[in-house]
Length: 177
Image 1 (tube, rainbow, N blue to C red):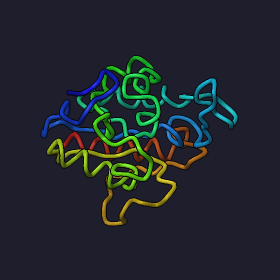
Image 2 (image 1 turned 90 degrees about the vertical axis):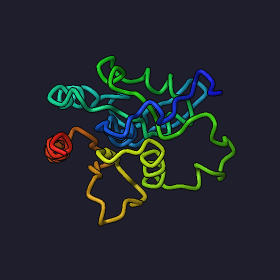
Image 3 (image 1 turned 60 degrees about the vertical axis):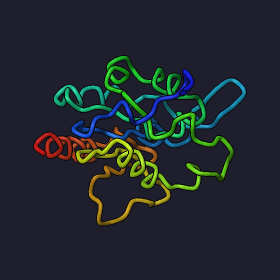
Image 4 (image 1 turned 135 degrees about the vertical axis):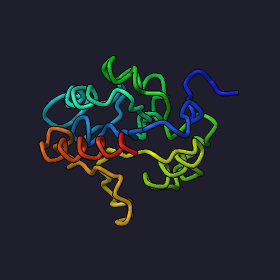
């Protein structure tokens, strides 16, 4: 049985069109640290400062579902990570790549996988065929042959107009499949 902080890919159906969403380096700069008082952005701006851009883009793609592929879920739990998003994105968020049944010990199981492998495991569990990922991928884990990644600049995230255009283009293709 799953605890109240968990969510699995079972909320996804094979015919869903899914955006795997990272937070750090996407919705704000990738300079977030866990402190005693919570998560803190140590760069100019604020946490989730680019979330409104994603809200606007996804207004044209209401069928898209979001699966969280951010380390925030591992640190805070699914519900708290989801609650950090604006209400419009919360409503579209149905799952995450990490869930509480996975070992919490560092360097065990899930933590041994890079982001691409974490997403691929979630895709396999849910039987998805139509998906893309929005991630800064700072460790360059994404294979060159897989074009489903919209790689953001870790400092600019979704504030980059080129990134916004690439996301819109890949969402249009995703909706045609």
